[in-house]
Image (cartoon, rainbow, N blue to C red; front, side):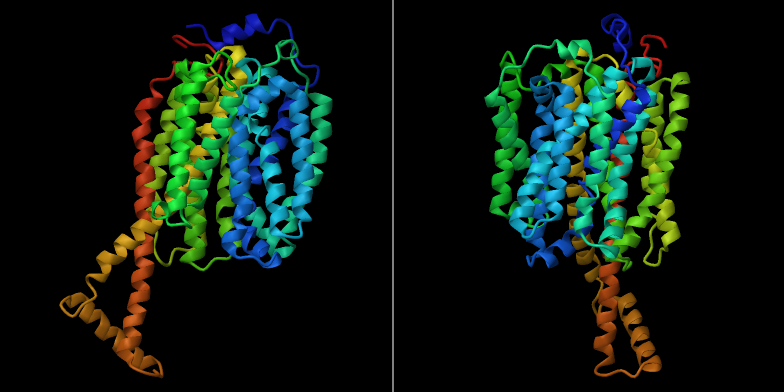
Length: 528
């Protein structure tokens, strides 16, 4: 099988962008960074938004749900939109509109306005990540894509980690409105940079306008909107105990199954699923999905543990993640230097092994764990993440034909984002479920027939009588104290369980890494 690197040399001709490719990479990555950041930076601002706009917290969460729903609809059809309007033109339109919508979100006076502007922000934001990937693929030859993806990793991996920290700092020290308004200067700078540096290659300029696949667009919109609503609202609405969640799940299943069948059937689909026939790309999509599921799921767990069990503020819990982001930034260039000398799939193997090991290590949490140890746990996880994103991205596009690269970029980004949402939902639901299971088990030992409980209760009652001026029954106070400890212990055990499940998933994926082509970052295949 010929590689993308070989086809690259034949199909690209002598075309190279007039501007410095690395300036182009920075410019388009800045746009993607702004969009990815907005998926997590709003989370910690939701209580402040609810208070300012005089609505309940559950109502305020629609400011997040509406964005994710709109974003998930546009992601898979972004390649079609780029072909229709022209890639550079569409990219610039998305940046400008995203920036304007960010400003409108920041000055919203009621929840209805905010939700409408968030929907528009999500629609235009959905075109940024896939087109960033597509521009990177055309700007750099296959031999340099590993280094180029190191730049894009800052947007994809670091932005969602920094989001809660930055959001906490802004809302604690200024106002939630600056969570949105901060995009305005970045958007203006990025717009001028992209307009000045980015250009469409000859094959993009000469590409035929795509026919409008209204059926495909409709099925994708219905399926992904329902799926995202189910994932984002499931925890608050008791999952399948809620009729609305069951309806959303059924609609998502029918919509997405119909969309896949239609896209394979029609001659000119809105997104070409035939790219999935490429083994490296399919494995790359599966790899990035598992990676995103674990990354986003674990990114939620540690701040949640810090806030709910250790009493950390939103800002302090976000700061637990920040050193891990710095580890990723420091490690990615090192991985980029190693990639030309080692088969890229082996780097993935090492990455998943280290990730699984770090997640097993993360089970060493206690009720009195301090800030430094929490930071160390996250740094251990982040170090392994540095081995995964760039190699997975490089291998995914290794053998994709040039005419399918735009569709591949849209699907690659879509799978990553959807898997991230699934990871957040699954980890949150698993923590709740396992906490309840451990509480039932531990509560079974809180009875007069359990010698350990009777002894603990007696010692606690004695301590209360000796060191405090008790008002009321000391035995009742001691029982309440023991029950509080039971709840805390059940919560810690639940986090240990979820870390263990994530570790098992990471280890289980290791055999799949050997199915990639044995290529190095130079772009060659075969025996390299």
